[in-house]
Length: 441
Image (tube, rainbow, N blue to C red):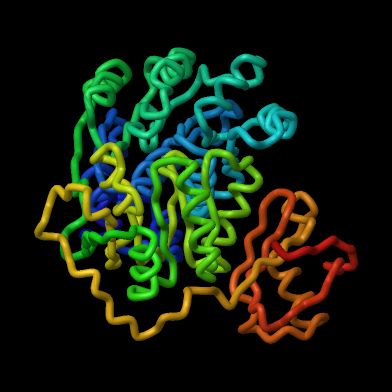
């Protein structure tokens, strides 16, 4: 690792990076930032959680023309969840300069507020392919003066069938733009897209898989996968884990199984509407539920921190999906465990990873959470802030500080992770003199 100070960045950016705790570059930042700052097109290949957002974020923020009200930069993401995460990271990085406007354009949110925000201008747009095309169809988006385009997790966008749609968007931008393509894998369709949209690109590649000493891969075999899942969870006792399945039908089976055995688990699959997906991810990230059951499609683009266990209840159809799944643990140098479960009749590619499933369980109780999530019917649009919520909970409701674990605020709602022992019986709550409805998820 090298220091950000070696990159000849402005003092204001360096000071902000230091406040954010970014002292040394990650490998992807070290090898890609010099080219990005020179304005070159780039292909960046690296594992998820490698720090690529800061790499392209610093580059496009330094290239902004703040006097120009038209959009300078566009970041395309495969999912709304990833777009929201990227936008949050960019807003932190942008604190070195006042009045940098960053807007998200994603499906699952009303068009009208987005159209209104676009009419006032935005320096950086972060969005999903489908919603960006929706704005083109309504003639509410002008990318004619775009200076930079970033394709984040390009391989996932292509897996979702967005090849032609990406080209439609880029055809509406300036040919003089800088284009940055980041991808964890680099298959033929990704190479083809890169050849079509990039101009003499530089290619940087860092570790695309996690080191064996970072992720411990374990295979278990048994006559009963159901018992194997239950015993694996009881033996490893993760604080936060994802159980992956291949189909929506299987996801319902597994969530019912875990519920039957008394585990606190929550479901993420393609049947959920966007608002419900958001609530599921908030409850999982604030540890109200220690286990998430998910399909690959539903989990695309999720950046989940502090995940210490991934379980493949069903081995994925594609080997690259296995890499993506297990790469969700051991983020940012942390260690993690990836378990794959097999029935005795199923074949295992690597028998050396097979371990005995004769578990000696020290704790046979199911994994549960001592937290629950309270929802407040007011968010950013109602000018609700974390400090306001804390003030009400601590000063007015007399809750101890350590009973309030995490607060998330979206445009319309606020979510508070509270200890279940508080047993609050509320229907409304008063914040800054205004009454809001509350309920527990």
